[in-house]
Length: 444
Ligand SMILES: NC(=O)c1ccc[n+]([C@@H]2O[C@H](COP(=O)([O-])OP(=O)(O)OC[C@H]3O[C@@H](n4cnc5c(N)ncnc54)[C@H](O)[C@@H]3O)[C@@H](O)[C@H]2O)c1
Image 1 (cartoon, protein in one colour):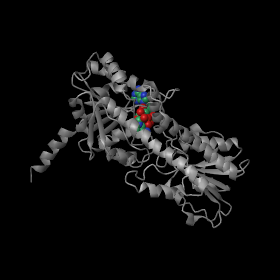
Image 2 (cartoon, rainbow, N blue to C red):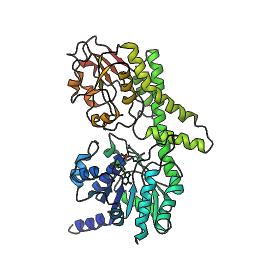
Image 3 (cartoon, rainbow, N blue to C red):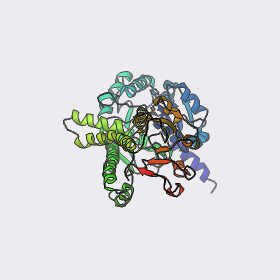
Image 4 (tube, helix red, strand yellow):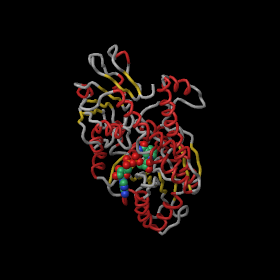
């Protein structure tokens, strides 16, 4: 009995590693917090001093459920943030690259930030004696690790990948809005590596995660990520297109989705029709896949259509609203700005084209979102914001629901006798609507 705690301490110590994470945005910070929560010692690095200060002060720079609790728990004993990449790499066993990989104008992926960071890490590796594993977690197009990341690391370090230092590609599948939960309880962990030794190091980091581990080569790991996102985006565009047909036929897409999603071969996920997908991943990842497919001589007809259907969806929202309501000089309340519930992320949110169209049509737009208003102010001009949904709704006769936040489900519209509601997500509790009030949807 007396021996147990002692053995456990040795075991925990043996399994825990020193990790550095470069880029402390959505993926980098959640990765850092998640590994720290599992007992690893983590330093997350960013070039933004404000972010670094906030993390060290246990203030999450992004909104994600559960993140505050973890930061309270792990900072500073297991997690610290820093501007000093050199020190972080020197003092760790593995470095995860989690910087952004935006789209270039032609849709291809821009590896500028990944390559910059790889070069910095390479320069540190030049001076480092112990074996270090460099892991790319950023989403990078198949072939990127071998064609770009490794050459940069080798050039700057003067050392050989797979011999003097390790290289791994470990794609991240978390969903914003439930990112902490997803990171800590993944469906699978994909580890693409140059050799078994490197993969083993990273598998050890994930030892306490209860998920199947798939060991593949670097390019396959990269392809798994793009295939997953392309398929999920395809599901969304598919159901939106069927939803548009349903609307014309007088059929409710949400009943259809339920009936379809109960088929275990299909699953109910990503079958909720709405104003289209957004965020930092699906649009750019599908575009990058389209570009890569063309580069290798394949015309990606299906993926092109996925993007086309998605670009059309906010326009259909606007068409429906314009057909039905007089907008010029009308106060219109937009409920929901983030591209999905649970996040403050406005990147590629369908709310942007919808609101721009409303403003262009002369509407006086007042918006409310529980988390995304600060970010929205940088994207949208010519509209006003209110701190509560009640204030946003006061004096309006038309409310448009764009994001599926839980708090909108409970809005009591019953005292608002003249209110008309256009709900692109079908989330309202209709018992709370005044009888006879106009309640209309996008795909139902
Ligand atoms: N957001 C998601 O839901 C998600 C999910 C899975 C994968 N991904 C992928 O993960 C990657 C990162 O995405 P994100 O949403 O976290 O991006 P992000 O823009 O939120 O974060 C990137 C961070 O990197 C920092 N940075 C840039 N250059 C740096 C440098 N030289 N040194 C240190 N820090 C630097 C930025 O300041 C920023 O904080 C992308 O490739 C993305 O496709 C994102």
